[in-house]
Length: 98
Image 1: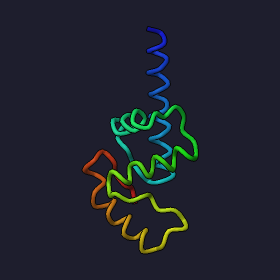
Image 2 (image 1 turned 90 degrees about the vertical axis):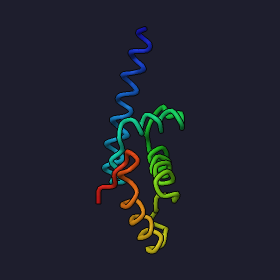
Image 3 (image 1 turned 180 degrees about the vertical axis):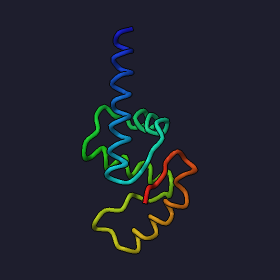
Image 4 (image 1 turned 30 degrees about the horizontal axis):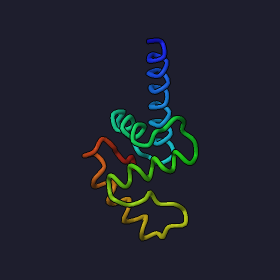
C-alpha cells in the first residue's frame, strides 16, 4: 500500500514536470490525462532532454502526423507544422500556445 502511494506521488510529480516543461519549451499545454497516457505508452520513468524531444514528437505525431520542428528544418516545414498544430491541437487535450 505504501509503495502504491509512493508511486502515485512520483507519478503526479512527473506529470507536473512534463506539463510545465512542455509548456515552457514547446508551448504545448497538455492535459494531465494525455500526459499520463504518454507516460504509460512510453514507459517514462524520468524526464530530461531526450524525453522532452520525444514527448514533443509523440504529441505532434498524434496531432498532425509530423515531427516537432527542429532548428535544422526548413521554414516551410515549420510554417506548415505550426498552422496544422494550431488548427488541430485543442480537440485532443493538447493546446498550442502561440
